[in-house]
Amino acid sequence: MIQRLLIIFLVISMAGCVSSRKYLQRGQYDRAIEKSVKKLSRKPDKRDEQGVLKKAYNLAMEEDKQHIRELRMSGQPEVYEEIYLLYERMEQRQNIVRRLPSRVLNKINYKYVNFEKEKINAKKKAAEYLYAHAKKLLESKSRFDARKAYNEFVRLKNILPSYKNTDQLMREALAKGQSEVLFTMSNKSNTALPKGFESELYKISLADLNTQWINYDTRQVKGKNYDYYIDLELKGIMVSPEQVKQNEYTETKTVDDGWEYVLDKNGNVKKDSLGNDMKVKKTKEISCKIIETQMLKHTTITGRLEFIKAAQNQVMKTDPVAAEWHFEHAYIQTYGNIDALSKETKEKLGVKPVPFPPSPDMILNAVTVLKEVSKDAIYSHRGMFQ
Image (cartoon, rainbow, N blue to C red; front, side):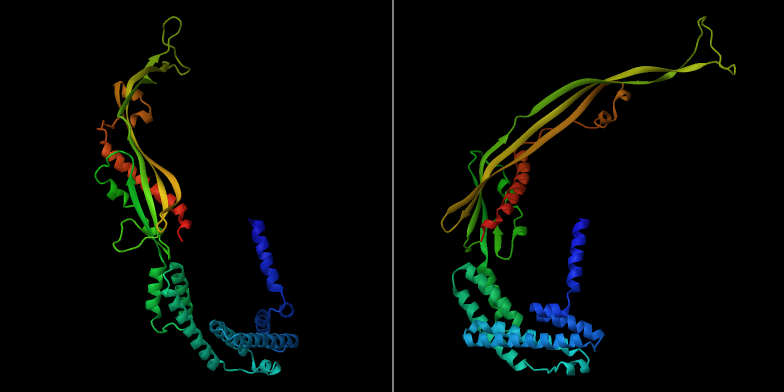
């Protein structure tokens, strides 16, 4: 990581060390101008920088003017957006140099040229072309042409934000350009679905997968034509039998049990060095029998997602999906001294038996998992929706 940072720092440092003359030699005229203006702002009388600035500025301006002449000669209406942007660039370039002291401007023979008339003319023609071309694209039934039209309108707004009814047409292009995807479900599991299954499944939150050009619905909208379908085909729904397992074991612990005198071989109480009776702690072993009952039940839903192109009713891809929900509950019964129990076992003392959840509830719980699994699969294959 440190090495990468050092390399980046060195590259930036080397870029900062490139002289204006070197930029000029490379044909990077605007970089040369920027560099020279910065230096001449601090030291206006540097003749070498004045020379570089004069040459770079004249070459840059002439290059853009020549490009404009060539574009005009092409006679193509789409060139006016580029012509407008070239006039914008020349105007910005003039303003950058214009900030220098007058004595520098005199040395480089700087003359300000007002391009406003040319800019307005190019802007007008560019807007007319972009508007007409985008409208023509919008007349097509292709959603891809509608997207192109939208992008044309965006470029138009960058030039003339309030041109005619551009905003209205952009909304139309956005609507026409969207790919509509409908999520559906078909039950091929030979199992009756519990009440609420479909409504819960269709709560799958696909709206946050929407993009500018892709819209997902989980309920069919009347009158809307869909480009793609995602069908969740249920193949199997299995609920296991209720299982009850018991495990019996015993836990023991050695605990203090008061004290007793230390006796010598003659049965007399021993004395310590201070003449006090000697005593030692007594211990005993306690135990507790535990019967642990485990309640187990689980459900599994299997199926597959089919990604379908609506126009040809063509299955583009299938992806298997599965979801599980497990019910596990354990409680204990104790016989003996509970002080012998470990900390982990004591934590189970307050747990009571509960009834097994009904199978329909188990299936509905599995649906919550199925929604997330399906959503992840749809997200991973989102690139197939165009």
